[in-house]
Length: 188
Image (cartoon, rainbow, N blue to C red; front, side, top):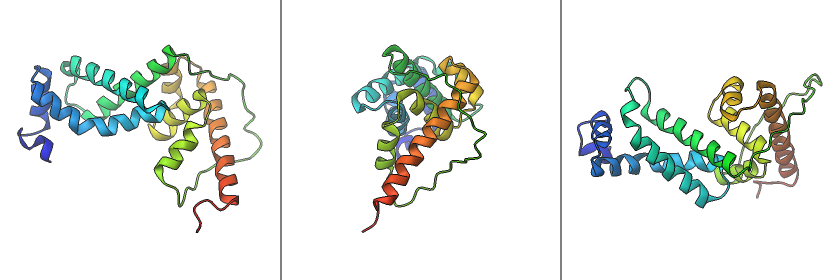
């Protein structure tokens, strides 16, 4: 990999970054910034705010590099910081409102997503149209892979509220996809 070729390996790059080496920090940033902007963008609709959150996240990454123990994925460690920064931003801006209404899941309906002929930008636009509370839980669960218990702890909501938000988000997305499929989205 070109970014790391100057250093013997990623571990050395991380260690030098932790010691304040600006060149190493720059290379680390260049390697991970595009992916981490994508993570922040999943939570935050406005690209400029997402960029600000990502930059704040990298400040925390560099301040806390000494806590990374090389026991897991470095990218995963950065990703968790970006998710927490995104949630913190949403909380500060009071963009997230959670609906505590419990949804009856006994109806036998099962929602699943089969997405074909859609580009990533279009899917992101559909997700962006969700109410912020639904969107945050949906992204954390469906994209980031958090469990409802973890989501509840991070967002300071109950596990059942997390499940309810996910159910509602899926239902809305499925309805939007159904409407688009009926009007021939993706066909020529």
